[in-house]
Image (cartoon, rainbow, N blue to C red; front, side, top):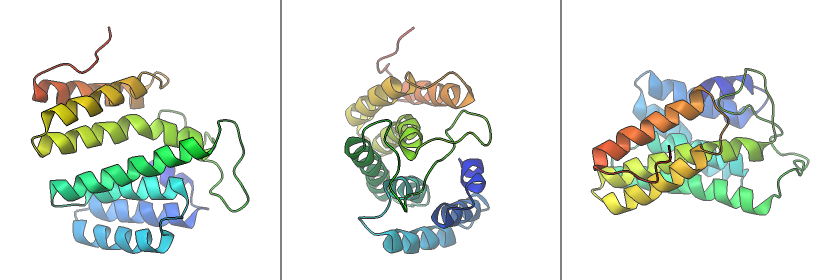
Length: 184
């Protein structure tokens, strides 16, 4: 994901999210969390849905408490679902929106409408929420999210992104001790 964010340097919000991700990956979890929090307040609840989804998705990773991580992952899903519901597929972004973004699993420089990128986020969002529920010892909720993750990953094009998500879903299913909607 950070490669896609860097490729979109014309979008200042995504650049700042990418910088916070780099801080987190370099081990400065607290500073990453502080920067993402400030950006979250700057964007606000009416801000761009793709920005809110991406920011909340990565803010979840900076949390120390599994309940806080779940809250942020649910915010990311809510932003993605709200955008998909509000915008019919095939419509163009309005003036001032983020424009186009690269989609996971596709070549560098591939550009698409934000709706496509948000749809590609769904398997990861559901997988993260499933992992949050597993960490909170809520296996039934975790399995329900794994079902949603598996259904949405099956809609993705073949590639490394899709396979990586499938592998992660399989690992979490094993951890939970049961299959969640596996299809051959």
